[in-house]
Amino acid sequence: MRVILLGPPGAGKGTQAQLLSTRLGVVAISTGDIFRANVGAGTELGKVAKKYLDTGELVPDEVTMAMVRERLAADDVVAGYLLDGFPRTTMQAQGLDEHLASVGQPLDGVLEIQVPTEELVARLSGRGRRDDSPETVRRRLEVYTEQTAPLVDYYHAQGLLHAIPGVGAVEEVTERAIGALSAARSS
Ligand code: AMP
Image 1 (cartoon, helix red, strand yellow):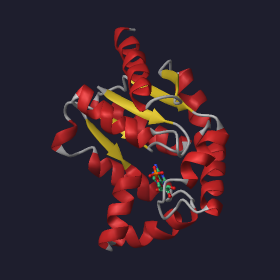
Image 2 (cartoon, helix red, strand yellow; image 1 turned 45 degrees about the horizontal axis):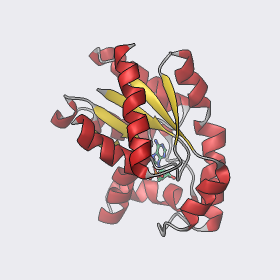
Image 3 (cartoon, protein in one colour; image 1 turned 180 degrees about the vertical axis):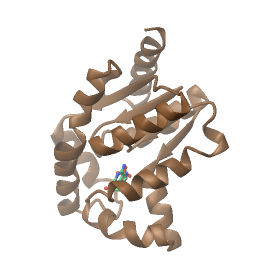
Image 4 (spheres, protein in one colour; image 1 turned 60 degrees about the vertical axis):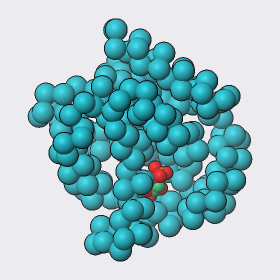
């Protein structure tokens, strides 16, 4: 099963990706985690990505696409995957569509996790990640609205979008996600 988790920073995509990965038996791929690992290890990619992560801006599409293409060529994606934090721009979504078409593997669905803005700000300011300073949080939310939110329409137009409320207990959100994805599978 190939699924995208879409939603603003703080929506719980990472948490749900981990839980759903276990439930569905597919790997969770977080582009944010891959960037952070590269920054931590001081790789060339990490050096390029660092300034974007620190300011809440998006890493340029070409850099991100090259990294994702490489990740999707690994053996562990054969059973499928959950994409957490990718795509984040229309160009990335188009790049992913091209990749999927070229390997003949369509997406099963796109899960949009919806959380009210006040709740996002409260969650993000309590998380303690280095890009969670108030200024960076504000910028990351703006970047989501400007560059990533248009993907809701993009995937809705493809008939792939399933929106679920991302509020309440973590397990409840997981159950909603599983429900939405079984609907996706049987449609
Ligand atoms: P995340 O952990 O998903 O919140 O991502 C943390 C940061 O990594 C973002 O604020 C961006 O700077 C960068 N990043 C993660 N995924 C992407 C992506 N798909 N495109 C561009 N930048 C990304």
